[in-house]
Amino acid sequence: MNIQTFTQEGDWIQASTEKIANNLYEQIQAKGDANLAVSGGTTPFVIYQELAKQALDFSQVDLIQVDERYVPENNPESNWKNVSKSFEGVDFRQTIRFEYLDQIQDTLALAQAKLPPQLGITILGMGMDGHFASLFAGGEYWDNISNNKALITDAPDNYITQERLSLSPEYILNSECIIVLLKGEDKYNYLINSLNQNHIPKEFPLQYIVGHPNLVIYCYLD
Image (cartoon, rainbow, N blue to C red; front, side):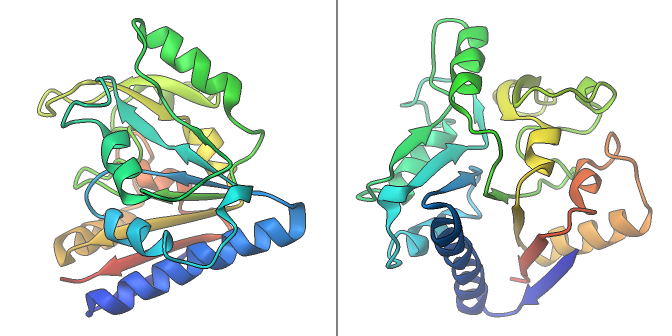
């Protein structure tokens, strides 16, 4: 695990953007195409906007949604609404997302049918409870590891929208590269303290991916 900290937001944005852009370029060079899995939340949007300006052949890149609240796209809670705005004007080869259908099970099935065998680079955030994607502490999925690429989850009661869809822990862990974007000294301290206590993933979800061989955590200590 590689943890990098930054005291200047510009340096954090530049380092994160360069890492993502270089990975996408390498994927395209090696395979002829690439895929990029992105999380919502407010932290990564400035980096997505910077990435959209890079000289990359986005027509060879698939954009994949990591997680979503089960709400219509025009709902303020929608992750996709903000992700798509960040990449406005970018012509991806295709987008794979959790489309809002009448039944949440149909939304899940449609996404799973489109997802590739393996993720290239996955961008994650971390909540103050240690969750990533929509994979929360205490979730039953930590006790029942499966081969599903995505799953339906429930956020804790203190979240506005409980019904969620998320890429699965094992599918995310199988990514070629994982980047975690953090903002705030409080989150950084929480991360370090939690890792030092060696929690199991059900107690501190991010623990599930810390052994990944190509994991980088970029933290802006604002």
